[in-house]
Length: 94
Image 1 (cartoon, rainbow, N blue to C red):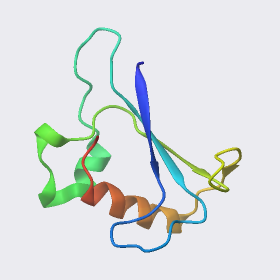
Image 2: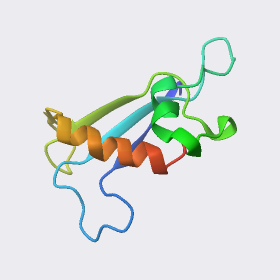
Image 3: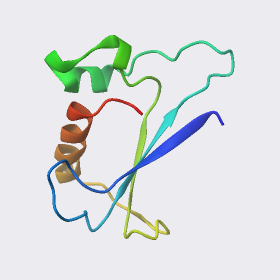
C-alpha cells in the first residue's frame, strides 16, 4: 500500500467526538523506495516542537466527512484550519 490514512475525530482531552470527522491521508511507500521530503507546512506549524526524525513527510491530504459513516465529504472552512493546526502541532505521524 503506497499510502495509509488516519481518522481524526477529537482533540486530546475532549470528551465528545467531532460531529464531522476528518481523515488524514499520508504516503508510506514511494515508488523508488526513498524517503519522502519533509512536509514544510507541518514542520512550520510544529515550530519549536519540530523533530526531523518524527516529521510528517510527503503530501498530506485532509478530508472532512459529514458524519461518522464516512460516506459524504463536507467543505472545510477557516475554523477547521485551527483544529487541524492544533492536531498537527501536537501529533507525530503514525
